[in-house]
Length: 181
Ligand SMILES: [Ca+2]
Ligand SMILES: [Ca+2]
Image 1 (spheres, helix red, strand yellow):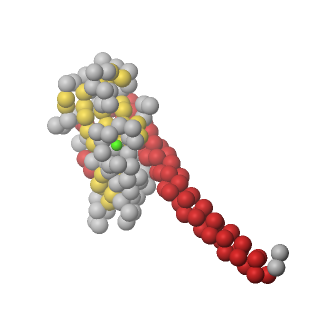
Image 2 (image 1 turned 90 degrees about the horizontal axis):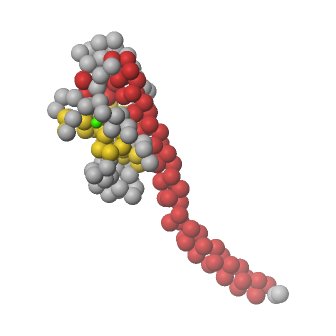
Image 3 (image 1 turned 180 degrees about the vertical axis):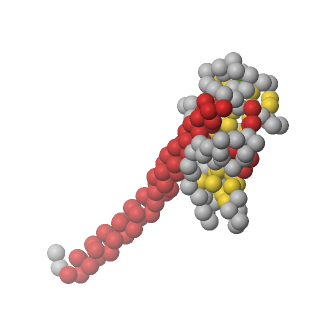
């Protein structure tokens, strides 16, 4: 092979590599998405465990009930009120001032952690896509909660937590991250 031919094939080869790299690019966000899903799954489980610990300590879901009751069970979101209770910053609801969990600061990206105000006040706990979690608790004590993905069904759970997933929409279930599936 002479030098001219080699130069030609080198250009062709580089072209192939460039096309190949471009074709592979759309796959990298999905790898990133897997990481985000794992973080969200672990935050959802952590949140569920911390509510469980709270109910074992105080033998009630009572403090979470304010304005959240629906057909006997409690439907909440991981808002600032809930997080302040779980972090021991609400003396009326959590008089022993116990922190029932640890969560990272969501930081400037406001994802995967607690969003704090400038003055350091606890805000909502958000998933990897910046949305708070939804939570259901067995407020009527029958050992079941309604399956939010299929309201005709009951789940044999006392606490469930779910994220809206990458599309940030709770109503679209295929991408949602849940503690029971
Ligand atoms: Ca129930
Ligand atoms: Ca969704």
